[in-house]
Every structure is written in C-alpha cells, then in structure tokens.
Length: 358
Image (cartoon, rainbow, N blue to C red; front, side, top):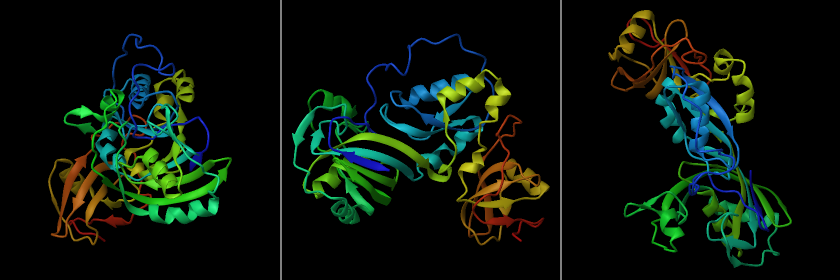
C-alpha cells in the first residue's frame, strides 16, 4: 500500500540512495570476534527495520547463522522497512530469480510538497496546492500508471553517470541528464486519502523508483509530493511468507543453530511459478552430474528438478528440442531448509525411465 501524504515526514524508496556512514540502528562499526563459518542453506524472510542498510541487515543475519555464503535479493533503503529475503548457502543460486521478481509495496506520500531527495530526508524545494485532489481523481489518474511506463531515475539513486554514482553528484549540487527507463506497474490501487496522505498499494517490476512514481502521480494531479513511508510486503513467490524480525532472530539465536535453521525456507519454495519435474533415481544421478536428458514434456523454460525422495536437486532448462539440461544444481546438505522441497504451485511433470514425461 502506498500512501501519499501532505506534511513533513517521509520514508524512502527501495532503490534510493545508500546512507552515508553508520546509522544508530546499524550499531557500532566494530563487531565481536568472528565465529567459525558453516555450510547452511535456505532463505530467511527478514523484516528489515527502518534505519538500517540492507547490507548491514545481511551481515547481521549471516553472522547469526555463521553462514559461509549469504546474499540479499534487492536493496531496501535505510528508511524503508519490510521483506528482505536473505539467501544462505546454496539458496544464493536462486537470488537472481528473486531479484528480478515483481515487488509489492505499501507507501505513504505527502501531497503539496516536493523535496530534493523525493523523501523526508531532503529539503523542501517546491510547494503546491493539493486541496482539489480527491480519492476519486487519484483513482482516475492511476489508469495512466498501469502497465509499461517510462521513468526518469532520480538524482538521488545508485545509478552511475560516467563512472560516478548519481547520489554522489547530487550531494555536490550537480544535476545530469538521465535517460528514461521502462518499468512495469502490474497493479496500483489508491486505498485512502486523509489529510493529504494518499495510501496506495503497488506491485511493480525490478527497477521501479517509488519516489519517482509518487512525484509523477502528483504531477498528473496538478500538485507535488514526496514519499514519507515505504514498506515492502512481497517479493515474487514469497508473497505472504511470514517475516522474521531481527529482534525475534536474536531470541531464537539463544536456542541454538537447530532452532535458527528451523526458520529457513527451502530454496524451491520461492519458485512456485516454475513447473516441477520429478526424476527417477538414474535420471537424478545423471542430471546431478551435469548430463542432459532426453525430454518430451510440453513445458519449456526453467523448471524445478526433484529426486525420487522429493529432494530438490536444482533448476533445469526444458527445451522444445527434446532435451532437459541442468542449469543450477544444488549440493545436498542436511541443515534445516537446505534441499527439502515440494511441488507447490506450477504444474507437475513426472519423467519416466526413458526420460519422458508422464
């Protein structure tokens, strides 16, 4: 839900500028002695708090899990909160799917004032009347913001111009031309308009700047706006997944690694949109060794591959040329959530001994 508000406070977009230096919520720059790293795989669906960078949140989770490998799937600004999937171990192999997946947001923007950063951290550079704007007029204007749209990235963003970050140039008072980029708004709804605060829900593609979207909507209504609140509520197939806060994670940490591992989701649970292919023992062995299989399935594209016992093997590419090729294969671990899979969502294709689909 995006809310656009008339006033002074603002939260930032999921792709706005990084913070300068450490924030209070980030804590001190120093950390305790490093614990031995371990191989653990799975996805922790973190509820990132405001005031913390995505990288700091990632390092916190990695340290708690003592994980050798970890990565997140799309940054949230320090002032934004909400869903930040943290991929550990083998689960990092699917991070690209989540990075490119649609994202869902709740946003609040304040009508009547525009800031140089597009959010409440910046200084007000323009004011305009918003009194003639109603919820009905907003809903009418949103028709032009569905589907593919063009956005000019804000100066306060991490994009580069001639090798330098735009936010660095912006802090020096420079403004450079930025080519418009095409993004997709899958869904946008106006929920409420109260005292100049417009509440919206947005589902959009990778690369969408919510601050710019709020400004463009306000401009279409004859006013200006800046974002005062942003919360990400969904990422691809993880929409609706329970979120784990850092506070809750710290509590579970006291119970030991087994309790922590129980919070992890298996990697394949984030990919319900992909068809599931169940292989026999010989085929599972062959594909795990990187060998291609004969294939006559109707589905084409990326599929999830499973062993006879239901273990998730990895991702394959089903071609219309009759070949099933391994794409991203997973090592098997017995830590919580590592390779335990299912075939929720997608269509299920069962390959027989001849490499065919039944």
